[in-house]
Image 1 (cartoon, rainbow, N blue to C red):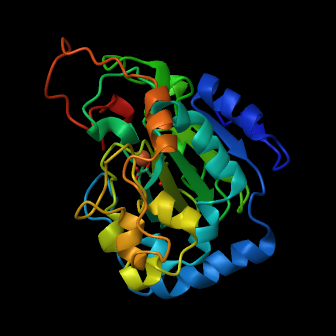
Image 2 (cartoon, rainbow, N blue to C red):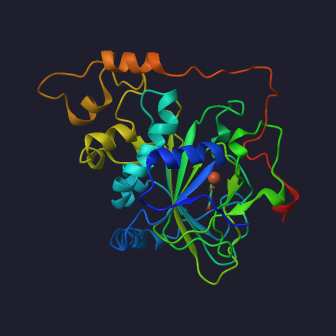
Length: 310
Ligand SMILES: O=C(O)CCC(=O)C(=O)O
Ligand SMILES: [Fe+2]
């Protein structure tokens, strides 16, 4: 089966968000125009020469993978703030945190002959019982076309609403098909995985994930992005990367606001760690219900359905 839940780039954030909340995912076509796509490809090219790669069955043996994209690929600095991507992240994560953050950036370039990745939940390493409110929103940007044949991301619609016991069946999988420049959105608790690349040419995607601000970021952005590069970012990008408090008092450095430390204290004086707006935002956050009766010790990559076994 192929993905049906698709939108033109004129669709509103509300429409896309509503659809993701029901189906786990949505595909928005043509988010990047041809010139922007070319810029991304040009900026990626030197890094492919480094031949970074996967190293196991999960990260792939014929997959080129690398992260730190805010530092490596300047166009990504615009992509993470794109009004559609950023807007959907705000709509889905905003109710559960005062400030959401960039969680992960990475290239996933599947060479011809790569096998299908195990189905998994990207938020599975946070030990929070499912179903739960969205912890993470993933965006997968097609830098080449994505097809069923070349390994377009496989996804299980509705699976973000499943508990931790249910495992996907093969007939529930759909393959993402989208033109280069389009974006697949999915909630982090949705089962998904890279497909097998049975085509002659590679499939290239850029994964940019957002998460609740009070969770530890999967990719350590402060080491991934040198401070002299981070200092050149806009205030919005600095905040998204993590140079912002995620709740009152959370994320300070030596009792100072992290952006003041990055930039040097501004002339008007240091920012407060418990500003009234942040207090108000904190007080408005939905409380997550955590039930401690569930079994302990479930593996992160806990789905090994028969169709995933070699
Ligand atoms: O390559 C893909 O399509 C998905 C990869 C993925 O889900 C992951 O590595 O977590
Ligand atoms: Fe994943």
